[in-house]
Image (cartoon, rainbow, N blue to C red; front, side):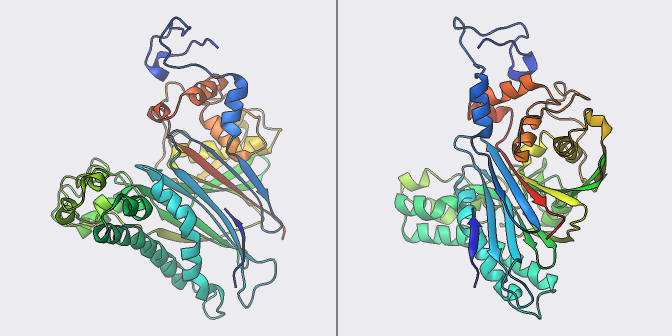
Length: 435
């Protein structure tokens, strides 16, 4: 019924950047902490993982890029376009799924989600897409979408460890249980071109934003997802209600003082207590498991259940959706991203302050960053890239339009670069104003 169409030199630098004196220059006679890559190598590194796809219809293009910081990269992404065979649909109607998975403690969970999430979601939502009665029932849609996330996480964690306990071998561990040991955030969007409804399902702290064009020099940016972390007041209240009288259920902005995302796939240590079984496992299996977090009393503390919201896309003015892991938003605010998009789109904008950005509902306004002393205001952005995702990554590394910082941040070697930036994964969905 559903047809899957698409699945998937010498250099002086400032002390604050790498912790050396500002006058120190690295030469072959020094112990090199860093070698600035040649320009061609920097460009190759920035563009190696970029892709762009074009379509006919209400989504006309998707740009994607990634820049690793972990080795290997722990992020994954999804692009999946499926025919909509609902009774009231036509040949051009599609179900378009885009998303990012931000892995941690390895890439096992994010890779599993990349391979399995779409099939699970579509199988659960199949009745919705094939029933005239349910086609406008968003409550039904949202609840079944949530169930698909929860069931897949149960498969990862519960089945993963049941298999390991039954067959405690390295083969079982590597083949079936590693996605439960590592973890991943996941943000999935589903765009139904039949009714222009965009659904955003958020598990963790990646982010989706919608950029709309009001006129040539005025844009608006709306955040479509909440950052679900241990410092989100709503998440703190939710966890405390589930674990009353547990002082350390969430503290220091982290679940049990340890895990920053309050919702995630995998991360078994925050969901099940293996203390009765762990000592029975052979040493070559047990060595891959970590001790339970301190103050683990009544698991689970972390859930994969997504926070789901629905939006009606206005194709006359809604132009871009940016989906990215939190590494991008550690370097740029929502309005920074919208301003960079406006400058990329409009060659007449010479000064970034010439464009007006209306920011809608950004929950946490980040006015300063880890590297705020490096950040410059009022410089033009760096415009080199046809791929908009690459444009955003390049300028995120530039700290306000300084190309020397792009060179520096790209030259940091993985995984040591993780001290300065996260993996960067960016998707840009271009909406069309015509069918």
